[in-house]
Amino acid sequence: MNVDIVVPNQTRYLRLIGNIAEQIAKELDTNDHDPDMLAYHLNLVLTEAVANAIEYGGDEGPDKTVKVCLSIEDKELRIRVYDHGQGFDISSLPTPAIDQLNERGRGIFFIKNIMDSVVYHPSEDGNVLEMHKTLK
Image (cartoon, rainbow, N blue to C red; front, side, top):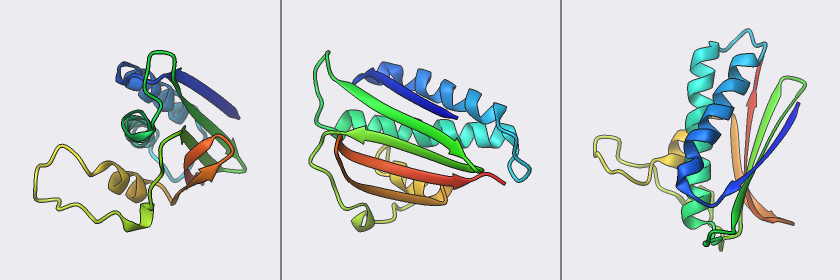
């Protein structure tokens, strides 16, 4: 399965992205994951990744977009979120202080803890946050 989504670079589309992720998760045939929990996790991962792409991705303006690609092959879920920002070193991000109720700075931490692997790197289309999860 391959699903490519392109939405305007506006936070009002985060709910739509999250809902799409939930519906895909609920349709997956997986033995090791509760479908509702997987749906919640994919919603969280995608909305956090897209929110970051919107805020830091460098594509401001009403005609700019965010691209999301989801694919599942051989029980491997792959999610890519593209941005056109200056990029950053994902390994240099500090672990947030969980006991502090900051509104910001926890998205990548959540993504890294939910997904099996997370990398951020340059691509032909700008930068890409690439996330993988094995579905057994």
